Amino acid sequence: MVAAIAAIGGGLFGYDTGVISGAILYIKETFPMSVTTEGLTVSAVTAGALVSAMGAGVLADRGGRRLTNIAAGVVFAVASILCAVATSVPTLIAGRFLVGCGIGLTSVGGPMYIAEASPARIRGTFVSLFQLAITIGILLAYIVCAILAEAHAWRWMLGVGAFPGVLLAIGMTLMPESPRWLVKQGRERDARAVLAQIDPHGDADAALLRLKSDLAAEGQGTWGELLHRSLRPALIVGIGLAVFQQITGINAVIYYAPQIFQSAGFTSDVAALGATTGIGTINVLATFIAIWLVDRAGRKPLLIAGVLGMVATLAVLGLAFRGGAGVSGSNLGLITAVCLAAYIVFFAFSLGPIVWLMISEIYPLQNRAQAVAVSTASNWGANFLVSLTFPIMTHRLGSSATFLTYSALGVLTLIFVLARVPETKGKTLEEISLLWR
Ligand code: BGC
Image (cartoon, rainbow, N blue to C red; front, side):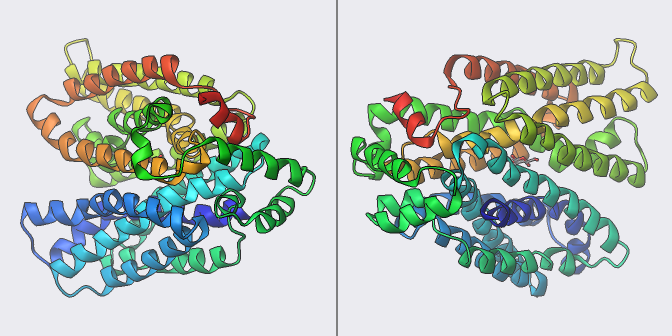
């Protein structure tokens, strides 16, 4: 229940990042705008997420994980309504920025809350539900846009997020606080009660003791400690994974799929949009591979297999777009469709869920909120860079070189995973923090 409620935030994260590509077409009919204003309207969400991720770190630390998720729900609800009723472009951009703030709050608070409330043996599965919700949100956005396209109803497209926002806020007020945060506040009796409630078959007293000793072994929980040597290896892994998740091109595909399909020969809008919905569906389905395997096979094998597959499919795409190698127009369309689908499968069971999972489990309790915030902000920063540079790169360098660049960055990701990332399967959060020490 805890995981499912918190994951509603993931659904809104996915929906609100996915919906704009459809909505912007009709927003431009109501408010004729320059290319720059259009860019601002689209990217305001990412900017909001980037800024609020840091604030979410402070809130999660001082006010608690539960409050951070409640705040996300409220912000989503208010922001969606603001977007829906906007009568001017500045109001709309402000609304989109606020939606981004909701996403920043949930992307810090959601996975961390789920990880801290889960028993170690199934933590991977539970946190992966957050990623599943992201993918469902993206798919729903495609579907809602398709349904409302004829009516040009962009206000509804942006406004429907208010309902799940309210649901998240109310649902979270009914959930218990994270036992880890309670211990950090010195509220041991409350923490023990939550531990016993969440894992009735586990030993709550032993769990409480572990939490307390982890806390005693670490610093004071200040932001400055993030620069300390003892935290560095974990921070490198967290920030590294967050950035690699983005610079291997996932959102070039998620945000620009219709254009990619069109440049590969799917000339009609309907075919390009149909293919895009296919990508969204595959993204949802392949996430189940991670949900099933992440606590069985472990994080690292999934990461290695997934990134290898991403490197290979991006390389084939890059070569196919170069032409010359006997790839004719109709073949290019087919190769593009198959490669993009396979690329999404590989991402969906590796970098997609496992990055959010590992960011929320690798840091010691004392500094977790801050370190998660910094990692998440890096993820949004890298996301912003990729979505900004993809159109420029394809324009200047061509599609082939662009995909080959992402493939090369995938090779770097692989080396990083092999050299730096520890296996955390089955370990309690306190055992993981001991592992670094
Ligand atoms: C990433 C998003 C991406 C989504 C695609 C998430 O894990 O953080 O940037 O759009 O996966 O499913």
